[in-house]
Length: 382
Image (cartoon, rainbow, N blue to C red; front, side, top):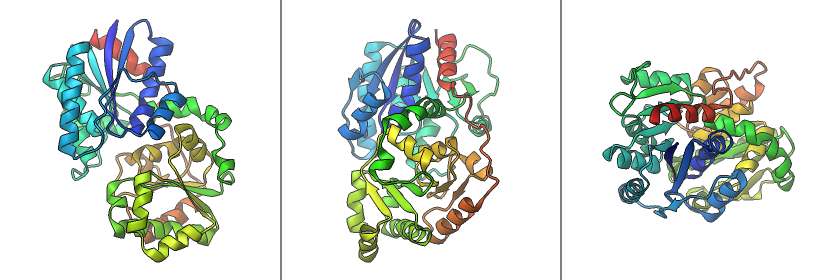
């Protein structure tokens, strides 16, 4: 029997953790005990609790309630809280997801007291160190013992940074083991896709026709907080929807919704509010998001997770960022990077919606990544 402490702090991590918790419950309940710690990095009752309820994730054993704040203050508070829990629980490993400040805090807290770090979504790189996420994921990888990359590209990135493709046992932070494991989010999308169709009314509630709407998400600070970028994004979306008579559904975080009042050109904001095609709604649940991704015509997003989910459901994607860590999507022609460039966004939409030979190869595993990860932890952390 091994004990692991799982750290979650933001909405995407709650979803990713569901795959591992489900694998433990269904296949490894006699051999793995999971302690869940919610740092409260992005805690919103509507955005977090509904995920625990909807996805059947066990309630967190601990909630640090750190809230928002500067990177330094937030991360320091989390390091202190996580360290205290690790000393109390004495787990065989800490499990970290992705690239948030919660991930960085967990990596620092555990590595300093010599508790093995298991990093899920290891090896992803945007090669842009001005992004806080890039710093977090690199730091976490380089103190980890078991590193699970969802893609072959991520695995290759790790070997390029000096990780051994076939390190000998035993594994530790000085001699880590790296894997191309497949993606736990693909596990989730397969598992929840049928449930989503049965349990949500998000399409009818918003008067959306299958295959006749654009699903857009915009949440990154450099897009929402910079008026020039935000105006370019919304101008492109407005022009596309008007020209093609297509609905745009935009689930918007409350913070971003407020920023529209201040950062959008007044005339553009009024046009969007008056448009019958523009539907700005509050954040949706994970199941609702899956239903939207499955049934839209195209996805336009600055979210890393949503880029991948678009691919899972064989939808083209316009990436509203200057780069992506999911380079495979661009390489196989199902996604185009446009950044916040109005003309490029309009051109990418035209290119992707006119393609007739788009292929979606199996890049993210077989839907059993979480089971594989559990098996490897059990073998190497005992």
